[in-house]
Length: 246
Image 1 (spheres, rainbow, N blue to C red):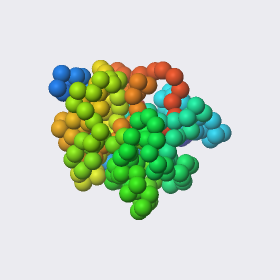
Image 2 (cartoon, rainbow, N blue to C red; image 1 turned 180 degrees about the horizontal axis):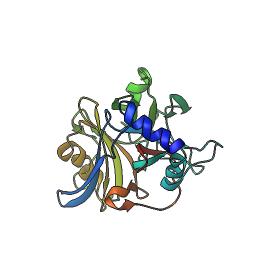
Image 3 (cartoon, rainbow, N blue to C red; image 1 turned 90 degrees about the horizontal axis):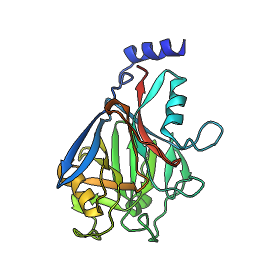
């Protein structure tokens, strides 16, 4: 019955029949990347952290299983920001309009504290990547939000601390937003790259004037339509799309 209802809703309600976003693999400046372009007018994008019992979901499989109970499935997804040992987000986290963790604006150690960092915010059919201190000064009414750092691209410019010949190279993932806020690009490097290279991919290849680093080393992508379901240690927040069951 639930599955039948989901199918009927997909036929009746505008936007309910969201298609799985298209993910493509490409090479940019000698390195391989996979990017998924999400049109927010067509694709339902959200964040997940814990299940109904308050336990960390941790894996793409757990999220997909939960959605299956309502006749839906996980479309594309990736880890969505840095987290503590108990998998609680390091910075701001909002889910279903409820703030779970507060914003952090202080400079600190590690990539998260490499200011400027930022907030990825979903507001219905629009999204934005906003510098954290600007967000704190003028909060947005985000349905979903996750804070991470550093910013990769800031109004068309690379983070000022990035070096073209930087020696820190990891598999990295991040999120960028189109100039009009209607499209989101979730991308992962398929080989180790430095921050400068990864930021240029968003700015120059994906044409996103603002982009946010989500994590490195533990980065993973769920895109079953291209045969990719990365595994590994349990994650904290997860960003992904909700699609109708096949």
